[in-house]
Structures are given as structure tokens and as C-alpha cells.
Length: 466
Figure 1: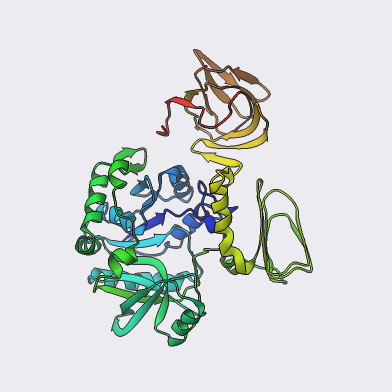
Figure 2: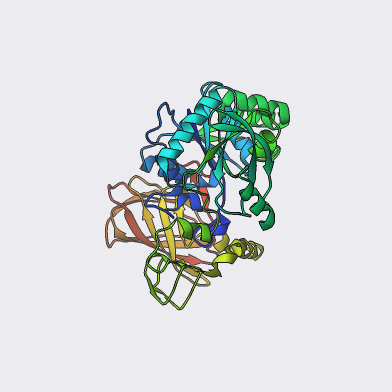
């Protein structure tokens, strides 16, 4: 069985923690590990697992690779999507990459929470048997309350082992309809998790959307291997139809079955959902960071950088980051996406990036910015190397705060240590790398007429960036 980790989401409903360039699956929201790490770690103990296949946005490739490396997981492939085309093409490319048509694919979104691991393992093992018998298995979450934010799966009375034949997939209902679904006992929440053999899925996809299958096959055949990544051909993949597994295959096939799953599942699709799965104090508050409360109840309060004090608040979401503060009633958190839409419409960077920006070599954080100057704190990992580059509009001053820096400046090579500095004139080809075994920390002061990140001309880059 091959775990297939789907990591294409942008997580806008958890803004301002989750951003377009650093979405929720790469954040440690529920445990010390990130959500994508938890997704793989909860598989420990299952027998017969092969190396996983990860499918992610190409902009997230280094985060995915590093986070898998941190927990000792070496994927067989990290497939990079040049643009999002929903889950069906992502799974199709994973199925085409399997070792054998007989391999069972266990398809898992990278951003779910499951608290009862033994029950989850039992359901996975049952799904594996059914998949090997030719069924396309989905996991239906036992619905304990009417929920309008999920799609539903209706079962029939006909059973196949632990599973029921699927009668219908239903779109997100209104509250009255959701209430009748839950009361009937015939409906489950659609978890977005699946199990089937690679060959069976591809055969059904060929029946119901042969164009999608052929485009995925061609895009993967024309893919380029870059470090640990499989770069799908952008021109070909852009012509692929966009749709979900459910709509493309599961709603149409006569092989779909649903296994009921009651394992403490949550898709953490909103701040209120995150509050539900987070440990709380005696007053029902889920608190993260430097927070003080007086007479406050049933709230989620997160502080990244500053002391947050809450007095007399109830059922609120309060989230502070270094560049944004978001406050909302718990019952209106779905409207966070409207704030993100406004940010994008105004072309504000807060929609996509944090003040701390991650790169494959480490990260940098803006400390101060003016009309013709900008100060950054940069951290370069041991062995990390920035691209060989130059700038048309800015000069740079580097001061070494910690560690050792190997600096290329034109034809010169300089080895600098703590409290030493250098100057990179405008237009000079340069490079910075960390040859040491501890992180390199530097303060960079930029000055010039234009300080945008797009003023970079790259000549060489070990990470394959353009």
C-alpha cells in the first residue's frame, strides 16, 4: 500500500497564520509536528506500507521535502503541480507513478486531524482488503451533528464486509437538510480520504474522463526530475480538466463503497474547528503564546510576537502575528476568506506571505523598511547557499551576527565570522553560503531605488529556481 499525500490547499480560512506561500498543512497547529508530518506519523504501525508519494504545489516543494526529512520519511516521489487542478488529476498522477497497477493507494489530505489511531488503522486495513477486491473505497465520517460545511455520502443497505455500497454523494446542505441527514443515520460526512488500487482507479478514470487521464499521462511523461522532485510539464498540465475525485469518478462508478469511520476526525477547515481539537483551560479557552485572560470563555487566542490580553470576551477568535491581527466571533470565521479576497484585490502581500519568509536555504524576516532602505534578519542553514545573483537597483551590506559566511563578491571570495561585515555594490555578481555546522545569522541592510524581491538576476542556483 502506497500512502498518497495530497497537499494542494492554500488554507485561506486559517488566515493570518496560514498564507498562500505557507499554508496550514505546513504549520504545527495541533501538535508539535506540522499537519503533513502528523498525517504520515499516524501511519506508523500499519503493515505493508511502501514509500509515500506526495503531490504538492511547486511553490511548497522545499517545505514538503524538508518536513518529510525531519521525520525520517523518504518519499518515492514528490510530484509538483504547476497549478491546482483539484484532486482527480493529482491522484491520477500518483496512480500513474505507482510501481504496479496492483498497488493500493491510500489517498490522504495533508491537513486533517485523527485522534483515535487504532480505529483509523482498523478502517485502513479493511479498506485495503476491499480495494484488492476491486472496490473504490471512501471513508465516511460518522456524523454526530448537522454540519453545513461538509459534503455527505449516502449509503445503501447493501454491505461488503465493513463497507456499504454508495448510493449518492451530496453537496454541502443547508442546516435543515443536514439535520434530516444526521437523524436518518444513512449519511456520513465526506472525509476526502480514499483507498483503491492504482489500476482500478485509472480504469474507472479512463471510462469517465479519458481526456483528464491522457493529459495527466502526457504531462507526467514530459516531466523533469529536479533534485527529489518530479516537475510536471506546465504547458501540458495547464490543459487538464479540473475536478475532484468524487465528481470525476466516485459519483459515477458502480464500484464505490464507504467505510464508516468514527476516529475523532476533523479537517481543521476553520478557526472554530481548530478550537474544537485544541486543549483548553478551565474556562474553555484554547491559548497559544503569550496570552493573559480575565473573565474570558470559550475563545481561541493565539499570540505570535506580542502579549495579548483579553478581558470579558466570549466565543471569539483572536489571532496575532507579526504583521496582522484577526478578531472574529466563532460563528463567523468562515468569512475570513472574504478578508483574504480583499487583500488579494488590493495586491497586499499579507494574503500570501508572512513577514518571515521561508526559502530552501533558510529564512529571512523584514525588520525595518523605508522608501530607499530595508533591513532584514537572515538565517542560512548549515550547507545552505543562496543563488549566484546580482541586483540592478540595490546595494547590500551584510553584518555577520552568528556563524561563518562564505561570500562570493565578483572575483573575490571572503570567509567572514561574527562581528565582521562586507558590502555588495549594485550590479556586482555575488553569493552567500554557510560552510559551517551551525546556522548562519546575518543582518542585511539594502539601499537603492527599488527593493522588491523581483530585482534578482540568477546565474546559478543549487535549488533549481528560475
